[in-house]
Each structure stands twice: as C-alpha cells, then as structure tokens.
Image (cartoon, rainbow, N blue to C red; front, side, top):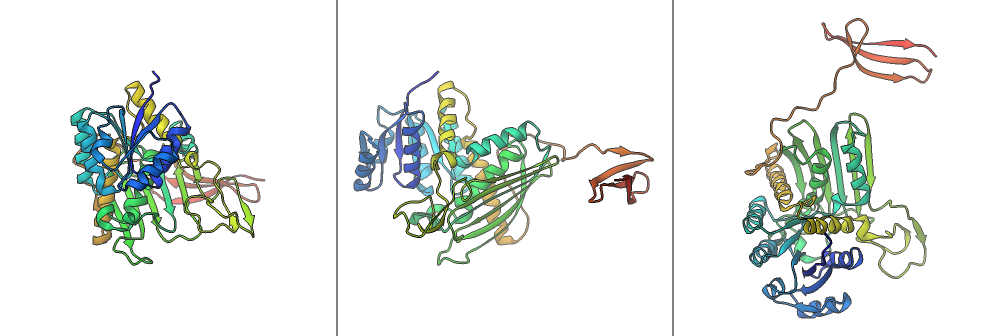
Length: 403
C-alpha cells in the first residue's frame, strides 16, 4: 500500500544532498520535512535550497519532530550510534548511511537497538542498487554465469570531500572503512549473502597523504563455499572516481564500469566553468560527465526499495544486519593489515547458511575412462581436449576432429 513519508534528514553534506535530491525527485510523494545540521547557517541554507519546512541544530528536536516518521542518518561515522538510539526511542523508521559503524561492536549495538525497539531499519548501501548491478544480480540469480567463483570490486578517487573522513577517530579508519564497505557488500551480494565470510588477508598503507588513516587498501575475502572476494580502494587515484566490478563464474563473466565510462565522453579546451561529476578533478580536456548521478550511484532504486519495504511491512534488500556483517569483515581487514596474516571474520551473530558445500561442477566423462579438463577450438579448426585418466590421474591431450 502506497504511503507518504515525511523525513527527518540528519546531515547536510554531500550525502545528505544526494539523499534529499533523490527523495524529492523519484517517488516525489516522500519529502524531507526537517533537516538537521551542526551549523545554523548550513541548516538554513540547505532548507531553503531544497524547500524543507523546518531546520534545526538540535539533534533531539529533529528526530522527535511529531510530523516525521522516517529518520535518515547522513552524519559522520562517530555520530551514527547516538542518532540510531534516539530515533529508535522515538519509534521512527531508521535509514542509516554506510558504514553502519566504525567497527563491528558499534554496528552490533545499533542492530540490537533497532531490533529491540521493533523499528524498521534500512542500510543505505547505494552501490548494490545501480541499475547495471541489479540487472547483473538478476542474471547471476538466474544462472547466467554458473557458480560465482570470484568477485572483484574497485573504488578509487582523489580523496574524500569532508574533513572528518580523514580523522581516524571520527571515521574509524581510512579508505577501507570509507570505500571498502561498498566493495564488500557488492561482493557479498554477488557471492550470496547467506554464504559466510570466513577469513581475510589485507594490505593497507598510507602512501600519499599526511594522515594516520590508510589511503590505500587491498584485501582478499574467503567464503565458506570456496568463493573469493577481492577489493581495491584508494584515496590517491588521479582522473576522477573509478568504480568497477568484475564477477567470474563457472559459465561466464560480468564486467561493470559505473563512473568513468557511462556512455558520455567529451573533450573541451575551454572548460565549462563548473561541476562535472563527483570527484572530477578538472573541467577541461577529456571529461566523463554523468547524466544522472543519483541513478548511476544507485540512490534512486535504493530509496524506492527501502521505502516500498516500509510501506509493505517487508524487509528491504539491505538492513542493519548487513551493515554489521560488513563491519565485521572490515575489522578483520584491519587486523590482517597489522598482522600480515589471514585473520578470521568474527561474527557473533551469523544468520546465513551453515555447512555449505564447496563450489564444484559435475565432471564430464569422455571415452576410455577419462574426465574432461578443458576443450578448445584451435586456430586450424581442430578441437583439442585436455583429459585426465580417472585411475592414474595422468593428464594428456588429444585431437577429436579435424578442420
């Protein structure tokens, strides 16, 4: 049943802007009714820009407003837990930006808070919602690429837009907690969120910026069924923002490029004197403008899914539980980066499958007691087979037909 929601928006930074732009532009019946900012000038300016009736610098006042039923949290990471507790006490539906917490313990407390209060909760992980990603997930679900073996996700750009991202205490980390959270949830969606992540090997370092937080990170995530996830994140990529995913399966492959190659390329020697796209570094030369940023980044489908779930009394695609699992994987990444060893993913609350079978395909038997390892059509037209003797284990090759 369609409903109309009045929203309390907590935060007036870039993410608050994207969220408000999306809410006012898509379903349109849902509106931001109250906006909170930590500075009065910014609160008033944001409210005027987006035609929001009320603005305040009082967090409790914003959350407890009697006319709103949904609270959207777009605040720095260290403020999430307080906002979640206040919104849950007020009985509001709660949507929280990524990452849910600065660590798994913080995320678990927030998960417990919303579940104990019995309030609706959605995890605003936009990068599992771009149309290309949703179509790819549907293809994987329908078996188009067979069993998923390996998922690689990459997000890099020149660095965050606000000061708190660079502060390890406020953010909880650097590039890994900032962007690795996106990559991890993309990986989980393709491999299957019911497949348990077991352990992590991670490298992280601060190579460019004069801060304590890492500005680069690479990690491998091993899942119970044998599938592997890999992410690469960095705050020193030059040339804009690079968001790409690759999914490898037993029967196919998917490549996704979300930002630098979205179908529009433009060269200008004079420049256009303004905003090109998020994290774009120049307005001259070869440019890659994005026609619909909120669509390409998944915000539109994200809010439609979550608010429709709220209307229908169902669970959205992403909940606080997903945010908790992501934080647990990130914790393992930071441990591994320090120990330089594989580290277990510690999940005190696992709700997925257990004892899953390892990925495998049925062996194809060929003539004479052999199993087929691989076959390939050669340049001269002949079909070559690599075969394995079932008794001795010896591997040989043979030609099965001619040109």
